[in-house]
Length: 100
Image 1 (tube, rainbow, N blue to C red):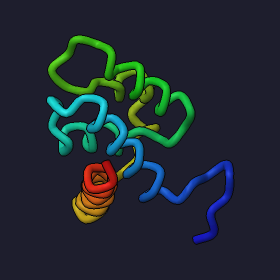
Image 2: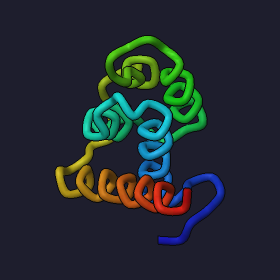
Image 3: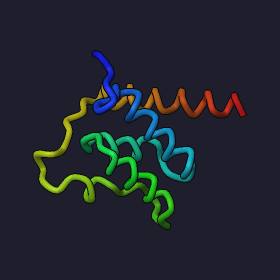
Image 4: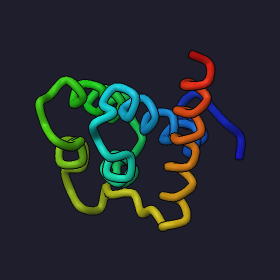
C-alpha cells in the first residue's frame, strides 16, 4: 500500500490516534478507545473530536455518534485488525515511556 497525504496508512494513523488519546487519558481503557475510533472513517474531524473528547469529564471516549451520521458510514473492522491497531498503539505508548 502506498501512503499518500490524503490517505495515511491506516495502522499508523489509527494506532497513533489511539495512543495519543490513551496518553492524554490514561484512566480510559485502550480497548474501548480503539473500539470507538476504529469504526469511524478516517478524517480530520475524527482527530479533532477525539482530542477534544479527552477534555470532557467522561469515563470513556465517545466520538462515534458525532462522526458517524448514518450506519453505512461505519468502517468494518475485523478482530485481527482491531488487535493490530491496539498493538501498534501499545508499542507507541511503550516507546514514549522508555524515551521519557
